[in-house]
Length: 234
Image 1 (cartoon, helix red, strand yellow):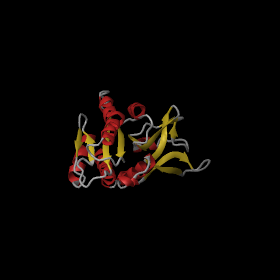
Image 2 (cartoon, helix red, strand yellow):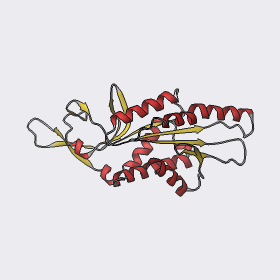
Image 3 (tube, one colour):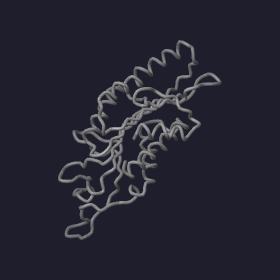
Image 4 (cartoon, helix red, strand yellow):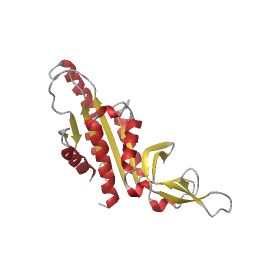
C-alpha cells in the first residue's frame, strides 16, 4: 500500500471514530463530507496547491493553481462525486476554469461517496455509488455509509424488534448484497450507530461491517475502532 493511501485510510478512520463517539456530530451527508475534508486536509500532499495549465490572462506566463481536494466534483452523465482527490500529474493538464482537461472531467485518484440513514432508497443509493466509483476512479474509491438508529425502544419490546427488522432490511442486508459484486477498486465501510435507548445499559452501540458480518466494537476503545476500520479499507 502506498504512503498516500495509508494516510487517507487513517483520515477516514479518524473521521469515523469522531462520528462513532459523538454521532450527533452529523445531521446530514454534508456534515460527513465536512468532517472528512477536515481530516484529509491534514495530509501534507493534499494541503498544498498545484499549478494548472489555465493562464491568468491572454499571453500571461502566470498560471492558476488548485487543490487536489474538491467536493461535489463532476462524475459524468450529470452526476457528482461527493469528495475527490486528484492525481498531481493530472492537475497540470487542467486547461479550463471548470477543472476539466480536454473538455472532460478528470478521473480522480481517490474518490468518496457518503451516505446516511436518510436515504429514501438505500439499495439504489449503494448500487449507484458503487458503479460510479468503479467507473470514475482511476485509483481507489471509498463507499462510506453511516446508519444512526434513533429509536428509543428498549431491548425485548415489539417496537425494538420492528426497528431491528427495518435496520436489517434497509441497511445491513443491502451491504451483504452489495459485497457480492466483487469490485476490487472500491473499499466499502458501513457503520451502524445506536445512539440511545430507554434503558440504563446497552451493548452494541457500534457495529462495523467486515465484509461478511456486523461486528460489535467497543466505542470506548479507539485502537479497536481504528483497527477494524483500517482493516476494512486495506
